[in-house]
Length: 171
Image (spheres, rainbow, N blue to C red):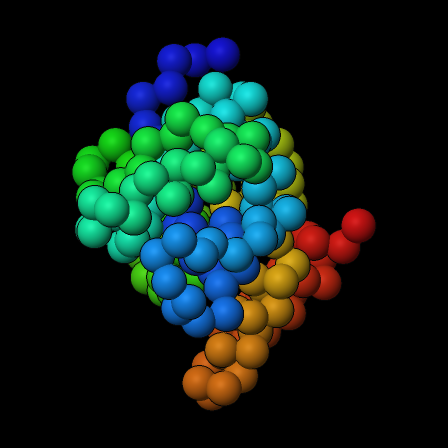
């Protein structure tokens, strides 16, 4: 495996842990199982993962976060609220992705610019599927993209999301 040079940031409240409103600094919700497993897999794959949370802006809140991470089998991860140029991805329930021209071009011509050489050698359909999962994470995110497109009256974006759901995400 190639040496890892970047890291993935994972938000805590609402992304890695359930969040139903602020209860206090010592309260962190139960883990969201699919996200916890995703983080464990990244760690197993040698990817650097950092917990990216506003909570660590208050130093006293770092210890409860570290204890929560330890309790659920991912102790020792860095806890931060600072981005740097090595951050490859940020998984956050509040983030909004801005689609670049590079992304739009990749959709039009069917090339995943962010993939490895192996993924680039795949068929156009496979490259688009890889791109969809990199951008949206899965079917729930695509359904949300569709909902947002319909709500915003963006017919082209809605049709694209439907197409991605129909052609590339089916089991």
